[in-house]
Length: 238
Ligand code: AMP
Image (cartoon, rainbow, N blue to C red; front, side, top):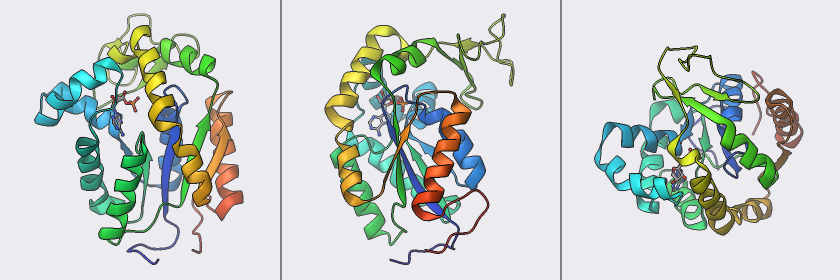
């Protein structure tokens, strides 16, 4: 399939349990490869904060740690993929999260004649580590900034004002212990099976995501290079 893009582009999915480090790793990947990040969780949180129709639909599901209905997220992703900045690659973070979403993504790619998924980066962490990461996570309350902190690994400023933009640093509502348990259950029940789906398709790149963020980033770059020659700043023949 040719698709409408130049060589050197990369279409990536980041897959992993809540707390696996998808958001953190997305940052390094999008900067290194110059591709836009589409983070459905961020888009939904911004919609909830703005009180849009999508936000009103999504809010209660997110509060319970459940998946927002497929039609809502599939429409969000289809709209994003149609944007000009996605012509030369994209990074999906937090989507797809079940088989129906994976199928909808494949259908969108087919119907719109877009270039296919190149690789699915699966960030593999133990449940214990995922819980430790999420429970210590703190985030900037300004959706435009969204800077993240961790009480153990990257403590927020003592006055809890974001070091980047000055807004208040808070704990995400769905990072509280009751909701974290529900989100991990949702992941196991609905999302985990996608690992085998993409392994079967030959697109899965499995990464040991324990350890320091920069070590994990290096592992991702090494694995992408080994699996298809993708490297920051280097055009790839398809
Ligand atoms: P995240 O920031 O990726 O952890 O997502 C936070 C919450 O947003 C999830 O617990 C879901 O309620 C919702 N969400 C994010 N992405 C999706 C998706 N692809 N499908 C359904 N719900 C989603």
